[in-house]
Amino acid sequence: MAPDTGRVGAGRVGAGRVNTGRVVRASGLSRGFGDRVVLNSIDLDIARGEFVALLGRSGSGKSTLLRALAELDDNVLGSGELTVPRNRAVVFQDSRLLPWARVLDNVVLGLPGRDALDRGRAALAEVGLAGREKAWPKELSGGEQQRVALARSLVREPELLLADEPFGALDALTRIRMHALLRELCAKHTPAVLFITHDVDEALLLADRVLVLDDGRIASDRRVELDSPRRHSDPKFTTHRDELLHALGVFEEVTA
Image 1 (cartoon, rainbow, N blue to C red):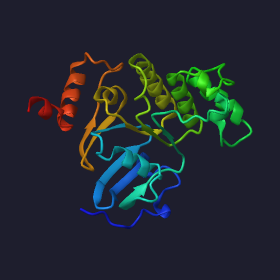
Image 2: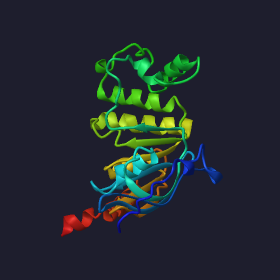
Image 3: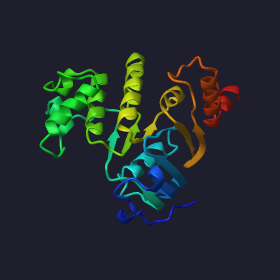
Image 4: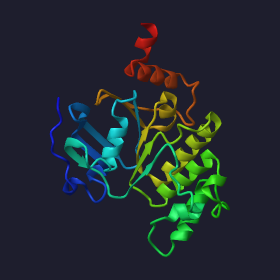
C-alpha cells in the first residue's frame, strides 16, 4: 500500500495530554519513503505514566515511529491522525552532549526560569551525579553520559519520553544499573514512555506493555504483569519471553 501524500498538520497536535489520561494517540498512522511503506496504519494509545517498549527487527519501522511521535519527520510522506504533547523529550543511543559545555550547562541548556541551575543540580543528584556539575562530558564514562542525558530530559518534566535504544552501547553491568535508575525516575516523574529496544529481556524488565512491530504493523501488544522486582527466574517472565520471541519470528528461524 502506497502511503497518502498528506502530512499530519501541526493543528492536530495537542498542547497537552489528551482526554482520559492518554498522552499519545495515533490513528491510521502511515509513513513511507518513495514506494516503500514503513508504517502501515498504526493505531496506538499511551497513557500518562505508562511505559511501553517497542520491539522489532531492523527495518521494521521502530525508529520511524519514534521520529513521528517526536515530530522529527517533516519531510516524510504519510497520513493519519496523531496527538502528542508539546512537552516531550528524546533520549538516543549516544548521549548527544555538547563536548564544549560542562555537565550542568548541558542539562540546563534552553531551560527557562531563574531556578534553572537549581533544577539542573537536583536532576543531576537524581541520577547519582551530584558533585559532577563542572565536569566535561569527555571525563565521564558512557553510563555517566547517559545519566546526564536522562537528567537533561527529565528536568523539563516531559509528558512524553521517547527513548531510542538508550542503553544499547553500554556494558551488561551498567545496563542493569541503568534499568533500575530509569524505572525509579519514571515512577517519580510519571511521563508516558516509548522505549525502543532489540532486547526482549530489557523490554520485559522495564515495560508495562510490549509492542512488536513487524512490516510496519503492530503484530503484538502485550500487557506485562510481573511481580516486583522483576526476575529472569520468574516462570511468568519466561512465558512472556517465549511468546515475544515467537512474535518476532525467532523460534521459527532457529528450528527451520
